[in-house]
Length: 210
Image 1 (cartoon, helix red, strand yellow):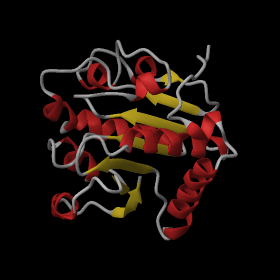
Image 2 (image 1 turned 90 degrees about the vertical axis):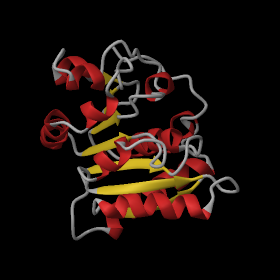
Image 3 (image 1 turned 60 degrees about the vertical axis):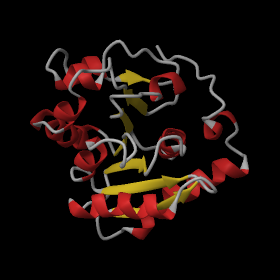
Image 4 (image 1 turned 120 degrees about the vertical axis):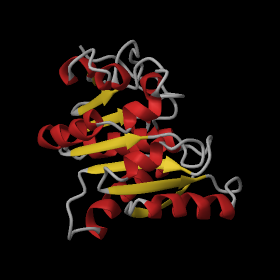
């Protein structure tokens, strides 16, 4: 049974004809057509610092892909301060953390959202060892298996300069999008975040000014 969504952050679902919704559709199109030479199935969205709007951006981007007719898996890999379950009005009693710990199966961890063709793998309870779980063979296996089941996998992570989790995940994904808050982000922070991603040869697709 699909739950209803009552969240003003998901503007593309609440008001699909708004100019902001059109921007998310444009972002979806740019990702698809700017990188025709390689199919981008796993895309990570992050920021340099907390509070720049990365989770709002990835939530709306996920809805944009689903509205296009693609099957989408949205993964909340922010195991420290998860938010996507609240955005989609879903529970977070189990999810990525319990899946990676081997306590549940992928089928048990994934939840349907109120948006057709969009599924959410919430973060699950905050673990004592988030970096170790993220940097595990189980995380790599999760992304590989998901590629066989979904058209698009979008991964939300903590900000790059806060913890190492984002850098670890970036090396496993086909591309990375950085969200930067206009008037808030510092160029030095963006530069340092890019350096960390470059260090693991992450493919930065672009920066979204929020």
